[in-house]
Image (cartoon, rainbow over all chains, first blue to last red; front, top):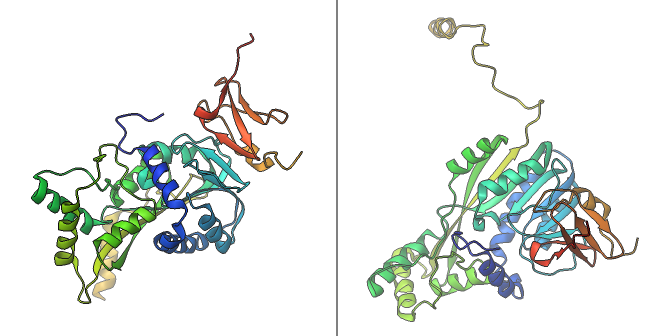
Length: 295
Length: 62
């Protein structure tokens, strides 16, 4: 059910992941790193969750980190890329059509999935309605500065050799937008933080190989369906070396990961007081403070 | 209950992805039936496949 005006081509994503599945272990460095950091955040919540839904195409990695955090009784994997595995506690479903009953879940965990989602507000809103009151959503997704170096050199190389560019690296959400979105949808107490993970590779080709191995190849609907010309790739690799090379002959690649937590509303959560409900004037508070300071 | 049945906790949280309506589990046919959407979703090896493209259209007997 792919709409042609969607930003991302979900079928392409399934294909890329299917291709990456076999040798994923060789390229799981980034997801393992992010998973570890997500697990710490899960532990820090200091809560126990009865039923959780976990979204990550690498269900084994997600199970491992949830096991490590040790505060979930039942983890159900939401398999959204139609890949087969024998995990019994899983649901196979469309990425953007949740088959989950309202107020039935205590926790949603999303690990590096939602940067490929077309309708992020829709997915967040479906998550909120599936959560019980005081339920938690916890997620990690790639943010705006991810692969900024590669994006720059590919655009430049394509401009030089072809005189035009094709879309290659997806639009990522930024922190402010995500924060506003969570609040607008009705989540409370959102906390968003960014980790920048710098990785070095021997050269741009190795980096591109890794991205492919991660199953994260470009799946923009408007991507060029042809193979990239060899001269463009070589030019981009050269530019990459010149601009972002390290002193020991490798190249730098930036991955920016946005971590977010937010809660389904509950009366026990702290809330701002109603406007006009204050009983103490600001003026006297300031005067009082000045008085103390001048003593 | 055989080993190919859906886990009871999974059944509790599942609804039809299209109509968000309730599902009835047909253990003999291994299907999850959504009356409201007129679809039956298959269950394979205990795993519910909640994909519209995989679902069987219910015949209208009324």
